[in-house]
Image 1 (cartoon, rainbow, N blue to C red):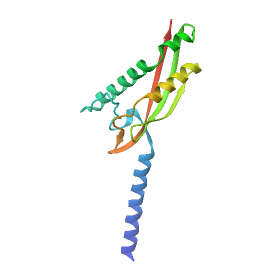
Image 2: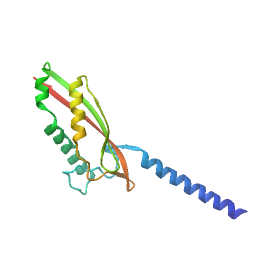
Image 3: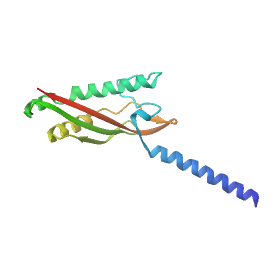
Image 4: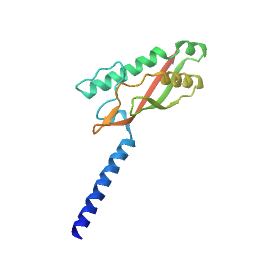
Amino acid sequence: MRILIIILAILSLSETIHSQNKSEKEKIFEFENVEITPLFEKCKPKKKAEKEKKCVKKEIMNFIYENFSHLLVGELGLPAGKYELNSKFIIGKNGEILNIAVKSENLELKKEMETVLKLMPKFSRPGKVNGIAVSTEYSLPFKIYVE
């Protein structure tokens, strides 16, 4: 009887650990909190995570700058000022871009940012926590200045 209780306790404990690992796999981690950074295609693996994160941030901004329609800004005839776009997206467990959300007071700028983010290539490596690929949320503030 005592052996049966011990076996049941061990099985129960292993099921709890398994469900914790499962929930960790399903959790969405913020970009700054992953142990291994998702890698953008132009970034090379580095020994220090901070250097990888710096490269990823730089390459994402370069991608947006290169692909965002500067002509659109002129065509819209926006009054002088600063226009903010706050974007979030998920870098999936396979490196794909998911759940794009953009907030902006200007609908046309919002649509353009959504279009650009949809063009973003798949990441060459997903984020990882405890050696497991996880979904990673990336927040992207972007400002446009019109003179």
